[in-house]
Image (cartoon, rainbow, N blue to C red; front, side):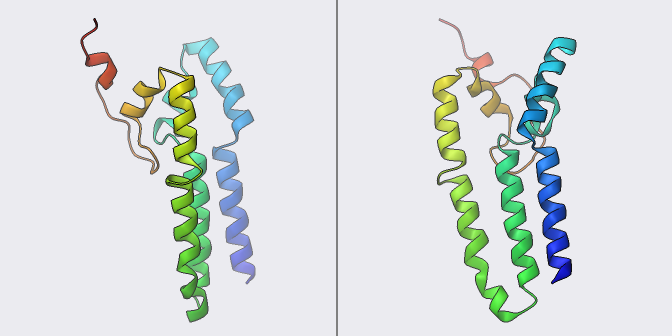
Length: 135
């Protein structure tokens, strides 16, 4: 059980360090002032639009894998599955993206080049809205 607690602490700490919003805000402001970049081009947000949600999902999966040391623990597969579904299609990603599309028109370019949930290298080339003819 001590290994499980240690793993949970390490995963939570790693997720918090990588996805700390105040840190990202400060880093983003500093990057924008020095090189004209924003956090969506140089941090975890370059690889996924929702690194916090992905990190939470990874923690739930890790806890499930730790529980798999017994048959009763393996039977809890519904927990990480439901939590991941909620983060992706339920209250997490879906609501956030709905708000962002309305609040920031430039978000469409970010969506076109960045993975929605799983960290993945960004698509190269111009975003879809940049290639569309302007009227």
